Structure formats: structure tokens, C-alpha cells
Amino acid sequence: MVEASQATTAAGKTPVLKVEGLKKHFPIKKGILSRTVGNVFAVDGVSFSINEGETLGLVGESGCGKSTVGRTVLRLLEPTEGKIEVEGTDITTLNKPALRNFRREMQIIFQDPYSSLNPRMSAGDIVGELLKVHGIAESKEQEKERVAELFDKVGLRRAQMDSFPHEFSGGQRQRIGIARALALNPRLIIGDEPVSALDVSIQAQVINLLMDLQQEFKLSYLFIAHDLAVVEHISDHIAVMYLGRIVEYTDKKTLFTSPQHPYTEALLSAVPIPDPTIRREKIILKGDVPSPIKPPSGCHFHTRCPYVEERCKVEEPLLREIAPGHQVCCHLR
Image (cartoon, rainbow, N blue to C red; front, side):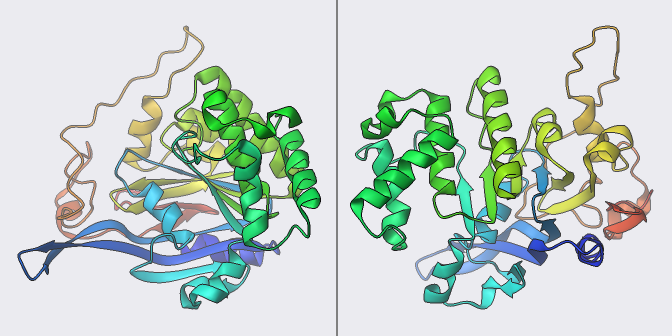
């Protein structure tokens, strides 16, 4: 994916986020002395970039490391290795006071719109809390007006500012989360499966809201999801993850019309087609996802791949460009 980062930079666009060789390993400790006996290789060498006003969709099965990527990019989790550049500054080298300034540039929308909101705070206080923490609002009146403007932007009524999270529907609670993410005028917003807990009809409303806000404020999104149909609607580019690594990266049109990695093909075969006259052969992968504690040798996907060869079992494939802007991690492509 370094190639993709270089390509976007060469095209003259501003990379709001550039990630190179990102790894996050969680140590496994046992015994009275808590000795490290192994590691969970949650993220194992991920690279990508996101330009201003663009959306990168990050997809894959549960447990593949998508959410860990998002939280590590924000340094909610400390990376084991790699670089995370926000507008040219490597935030992995920053101390906590310096990192705090970059919190204004990066925000997150969590998956569960209820558990991510403090039930003891009103909706207005939840959204306005960031303004207080960062000292943006000079007065209580200014803070209240800013929160009211944010409520307008996300489709909530100003009269609801004094209501508490339990008084809102799931879709409305997620709108509160979006308003909170917008409070500091960030450049980058990470959506950690922000619509997966919502009804399908509400998902469409929230996705359309995010797209409208992106156009208005030139936001960049890292949109994490497992639903390819949702990702197709909002993304400019898509990166497919499997067992801690990106196995395919390209623009959304190419991914849906010409997938090259066997895992991507399997994921796409499971996407429902609204036209009943069109039939798509469903690819059923054998076995279960291997443990990230002890990933398979060679290609991580070889234990489930329908096209596996002997080379795949011993030689690790590299993510390489097979066409302009299209990278695949597979020996057979």
C-alpha cells in the first residue's frame, strides 16, 4: 500500500492521513510474573493513505483487525510499529500534550450509539463537552449556540439539547455522536462501523448525512465496516483486510467489477443483488478464520483459498500493484 500513498501524493492531492507499516500486537501474559508467552497479531503491517474529501472503506470479517486499525490511527491504542502521519506530521512521535492538539483534527464515531454516550449527560452537554475541554467556546452562550448549530447540521431539533440519550432513538443517538465528532471542525473522521447497529432504513439516512457533511466540510473518512453494500455507497477507495493485513486495495468500481483476490471474490459473492433475475454463484470458504495468535505460514489465506498452491503455503505474498491504483496480495495475480 505504500505505492498507493505515493500515487495519491504524486497526483497533487493533500494526504490528510498516511499510514505506513502499521502494526499492533497485543502481548499474551501468563503466570505469577506475567511473562509474555506470545502475541496477538491484530494488525500486522498495514499501509494506506486518505486524501482530502475522500473516503477509504476498510472491510473484512469480524476479528480481522479493522477496528484496531482505526483506534491505533487515533492513538487510542499505541502502535507496536509503523508511522501515522496526519497532514505530514508523524503523530507516533508526539508526547501527550502535543498529541492533544491533533485531537482536533481527528475524531471517531463509535459503533454503538448508546454505550458511546454518557447516560448522565444531556445531549447538548455531550456535544459541548469537547468545546470545553479544548477551550474553544469563550462563554456558555457561545457554547450553546455552537451546539445548536451542530444539532441543525445533523438533523436534530434544538429543543432536544436538554434531553438525555435514553430519550432518543438509535438513529438519533448516532446523530448525536456525529455532532460530537464535528464539534472541533476535524479534517479526519473515523467511523467504526457507525451504522451496523441501526435498522436498514436508518442506515441509509445516516450514510446520506455523512456524505452531505463530507461535501460541505471537505471531510476525510476512514469508514470501517463489514457490509460491502454500505461501503460501496460511501467510499471512493476500498481496502479489504484479512487476518491483520490488507489483501486488496483499489477504487470501489474496480473492486466490485473486477475483484482479484480470492477473499474479495468470496465477500462479494455474499452481497445480495436486488434484481431477482440476476443470479450470482455464492463462494463458500472452507474452514474457519485462523487464530491471530498463530497465523498460517506463507499466505495467511491459504488455509481457506480455493486456488491454493504449494507456493502459497510457504512463501508470503507481497501487496503489489497489478494495475494503476490496484494492489493485490496474492501469488496468483
